[in-house]
Image (tube, rainbow, N blue to C red; front, side, top):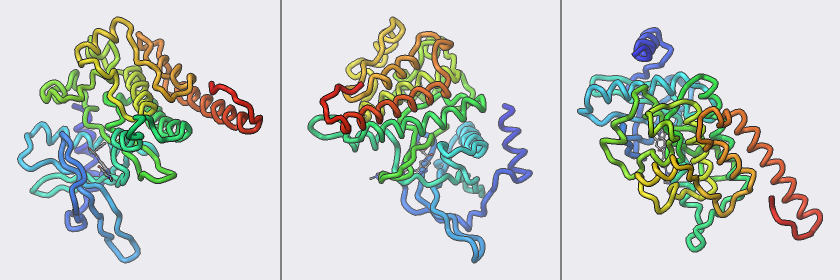
Length: 315
Ligand SMILES: CN1CCN(c2ccc(C(=O)Nc3n[nH]c4c3C=[N+](C(=O)[C@H](O)c3ccccc3)C4)cc2)CC1
C-alpha cells in the first residue's frame, strides 16, 4: 500500500517525529477503543525553555496482531498528514521494543455523542443546547470534512461518536478524532466481524451498503446523519428500526424525520445530504454555505422577534 511507504520514508527522514519514550508519562486511561487504549498523558519538556504538554497517548494493546499494528500506524500516518483546526492533531509517535504510542492532541471534553446525550433534558429528552450552539458544532465538523474533501481523503466513518470536544465549557471546539476506518479496504471486517450494535449502516449511503462504494459524497451523506444526531441530542438514527430494516427503509426512499427542535433550513440541508444519488448531494463547501445562511437567518429572525416584541413563528 503506497501509504505505508510514505510513512516509513517520513519516519526515516524525520517528518513524523519519533519521541523518546523517556519524555512520555502516561496517567489514567480515558478510553478503550477497538484500536487500542487511550491514556491521559504528558509530553515532558526537553529543555528548560519548553513546557510540558498535556497529550492523549493512544497505544495498541500488547500482543496485537501484525495487521492491526500496520493499521494502527496507518492511523498515525493519516492524522500526522493533516493540519486543520477541526481535525485532532497528531504530535508524532514513540516506538520502543514494547510497542508504539501515537501522541495526540488532548481533547478534554470527550466524544460528541456522549456530550449530546449528557446535554439532554432528562424528562423532555430534548436538548438543552441553544440552536446557535448546535449550528456551531455542525459548522466545526463541516469545516474539518471540507478540508478532507479538498485533500481527496474519504473518511468513511463520519459520525458523532468519532468526534471529540476540546472541552465542555463555552468556547468549546469539536474536531474529527478517529480515522480508524479510513484504511482503503472495501468493507471493514471490523464492523461486520464485531457485529457491534453501532453498525455504521445507519450512517451509510445507499451506494455504500449496496456496492461498498465510499466517496466524499458518502461522507456528505454520513455528515447529514451527524447533523441529525446534533439536533436530536444524540439519539441513534432511525430509532425503532433494526439495522436490516434501515437498509430497506433507506433504499426505498425513506429518510429520517426532522428532529423536534430544528430550523427548517437545517432539516433541508440534511435532506440535500441524503439525495439518493451521490451527484445530487452537496459538496461540503455548499453544506457550509447552507448552514451559515441558516445561522444568519435564524439569528436575524430571533433577534427580529425580540425587537418587534411580536409573536412570530420561527422559520
Ligand atoms: C465526564 N467526562 C467523561 C468523559 N471524559 C473524557 C472522555 C474521553 C476523552 C478522550 O478520549 N480524549 C481524547 N483526546 N485525544 C484523543 C482522545 C481520544 N482519541 C482517540 O483517538 C480515540 O480513538 C477516540 C477518537 C474519537 C472519539 C472517541 C475516541 C484521541 C477525554 C475526556 C471527559 C469528562
